[in-house]
Length: 556
Image (tube, rainbow, N blue to C red; front, top):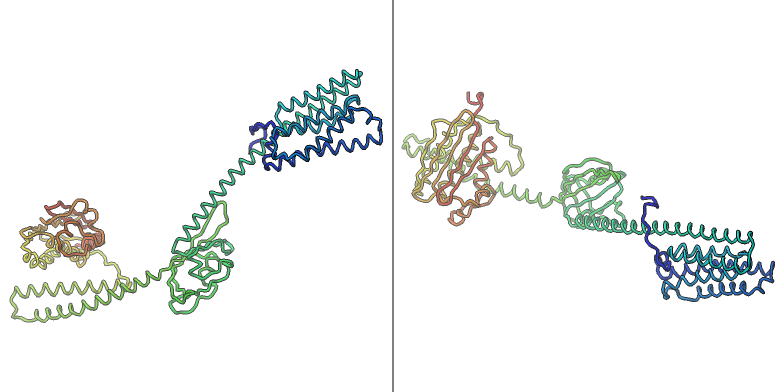
């Protein structure tokens, strides 16, 4: 805070109303009463003493007139409603007191001159410097008139001078003190307004934060380091059935470790553990709420550390019931689909194997049956993976092994040639004899099947599909180039998004799910490779797959 000298003082008003107005019109009236009644009471006490000590003084008319004026001004100060009168009218009282005290002092060697302290202090405290100078000038004129009329000697003149200098010193001291007081008051008022504004902003921010937290569907409880509840949002209160008036009391909902299992002991409940400072991270439990419903919860804690506040803990409770139910529904759907697909596939593979046991089969038929059997076995493996994934079974990642991309693609081409021939699409094989890559042959076959399926599906009759590969010591680059309908430039960046189908695909009325290219990219990236897509509308699409070459120990 700045020192008093460095604080600029605001100019005082002519009527001394600045301090009085701080408390409203009633404050001005009380100030006038207090200041004038002090003088009036002092004069009355003096009159009583004069009556006892020197009663002849009442025969001196200036003294009696001065006392009368003081009494009259005191009565006026009490009677007049100063909050309705102009503020400049207040100055009449202290200036009238100066004249009244002057009458009391004339011819008495200024024995009553020290009463000037009252109006001088009043004017110095509540009025401007001009008013103060005028008051001191009035006192000086009265002193000079008294000295002239009564022809005082040197001692009396010295007394008059001391009275005048004393009044001047008191006036200056009071004036400077009043200025500093007003400056401090103004500074405090400004600081109070700033603090009030800051408080309003902070309160507004707290309200907005509370509204945001109450709008979340996540239960949040803020706890102190001693386990005291500092704040609860509406979701937490509703979830646990807690009384707002007594948040320390446990809620009416009961927590369980498992669905319909045993209730958690009080010291093992998330609230108690968070109050002890334990760290929780996505711990699952079940809640039997006040409506008699089971809810799956995910509970976590976060430590709150602040430089200006004590440490605390944030208890975060997510209701994951819908997520658990959706996972179970997905598991049921995957199990149902897998079961319904597995039975006919088993029959297809079984009959294909039986047919292949016939030694009289023509070579062409045997080749076709082998393709059917191989496709069926791959489908069975895919269904098994889907079923295991839906049940959350951990599938250990297969270590990268050497696979011949040329052989895999050739096998895939053999499977799709009948479909290409049916659509009158030519498939040109420009693959090298071998193209060893580091990867899972089964997963790569799945990716190449998806690429070829899309190429055949979106290439009009009479079009061509060219499959080529480049082998280098570091990697193998495989390209699938078709002369199909192509993809609009605006759709290229979204081709890999799940369920997205390009505009040309939608307009062609060819059925599809929009999942194929996303699956292809994930498979290729799993094998440590990369996938690029180039397309021109009406010209065709080129899919480039770059796979790493096998290490020496894998290829050997």
